[in-house]
Image 1 (cartoon, rainbow, N blue to C red):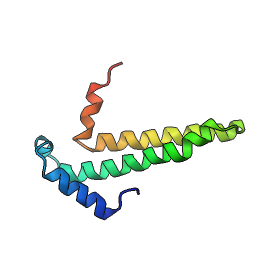
Image 2: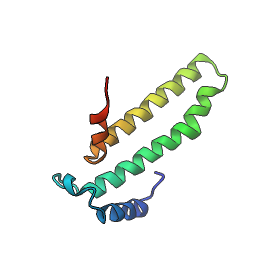
Image 3: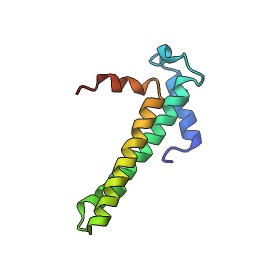
Image 4: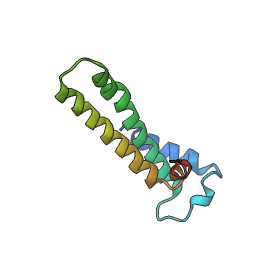
Length: 99
């Protein structure tokens, strides 16, 4: 994880000081904790996309290597999507998606 547990706790503490999460207080876990954890997990996936997967997609390789990279990209996007949905605060961005 990019952000270790202490850093996630610090982020949660910063989030708790804001009133931005006040309307998301209805779940079992405090919204600052679920949002901080989601941010850490999303950051980890974004870093993997940038530093590992995109270089593999943009270099010459055999078809199997290319498709493995595409599948890895899809898995990271799935992981990001999961953590967006898992955070009540972040999930609102999904309401703005248009078809």
